[in-house]
Amino acid sequence: MEINVAQLPSGGYGYGFPTIRIQPLTFLGVCQYKDNYPTGDPLGSYLYDLRALIEDDQRIKECYVMDVDFLIFYKKLCTVSDDLSYQIQINCPHCGKPINKKISFSSDIHFRKIDEKIMKGAKINLNGHEYDTIVPTVNDFMKVFNLYLKYRKVTDIKMIKTIALIGNFDYQANQIESDVLGATHSDITLLMALRDLYYDRLEPIIVECPHCRDEKGERRSVTVSVESLIVDFFRELYVNSPIDASKIVFK
Image (cartoon, rainbow, N blue to C red):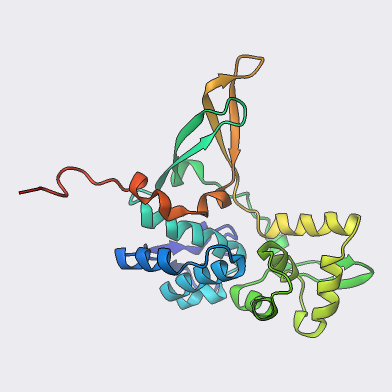
């Protein structure tokens, strides 16, 4: 299926192509995914998902990482659900009872509106050093990511994505890494703001608990991050894609 790049978190800003191709996994693909997915290895698992998207469309390499993170979710969603809905179950943190909620792509998944000016990057001062930020594409990100895949000095994928926001990594890798990992005080706030601007584009989903109310008598709500839904996605395949009696007719 073709997705219009204007519908992605970046709004398609600066893309030289109008659509990107994403395919749901077949039965063979799901089985291979479950067998080969490097659980417990955050770097390996992210690379595995990236490669799955690139197999669908080589232009993924030219897409922004902020869009690719969403497309990983989208590929898994269209694999488990033909109507782009997803059944989740969470425990209410207030009463402890399970909450069942059907998430709909059309009504529950929203992006924070992108400001075009942030897509042009910025100048920042970090630990006394001036840097230009970039909005990394997959090609840009891989220049940074490959180094950490090789040496495993940092295994926090969010931290590596943060480092990739700073330009000239090829020439200032050690200094940039030191300034990001060792950031203190207002520099921490700066880096958190950059991460929020360029990666955390999906609005959390608000789920109401049907079992309990607050002191005002209103339903208590629970915030669910879309990112958390990606974990163990195919474990819920049977819930989201049940078979009916017409699929199997015993003799």
